[in-house]
Length: 104
Image 1 (cartoon, rainbow, N blue to C red):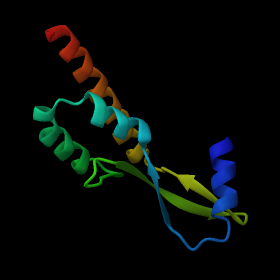
Image 2 (image 1 turned 180 degrees about the horizontal axis):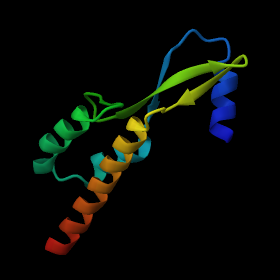
Image 3 (image 1 turned 60 degrees about the horizontal axis):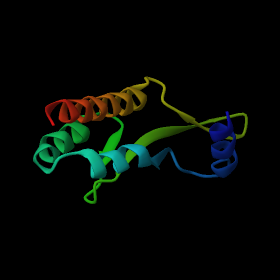
Image 4 (image 1 turned 90 degrees about the vertical axis):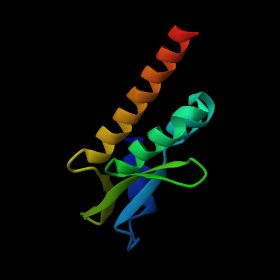
């Protein structure tokens, strides 16, 4: 789609093997909706997930390989590990939010 076209153009001549993308939705929700007492265990879980990196400021980065072919650089998540990790974090945040609402 459009993201792959943008990446293909941006990384066509680049020697980079990996691209880290700011997962702003996860970072925003972690900062806004995650109770302070839940942060340490949640941050540990994010750090343990493949393809994700948690920065000191709470920013979540998702890593994707840059695959070369036909002169183009495309993002690949060949084993879908990064995608699965992003999905697991998103679902956990949503479930936590619903549990907090139910408790209140």
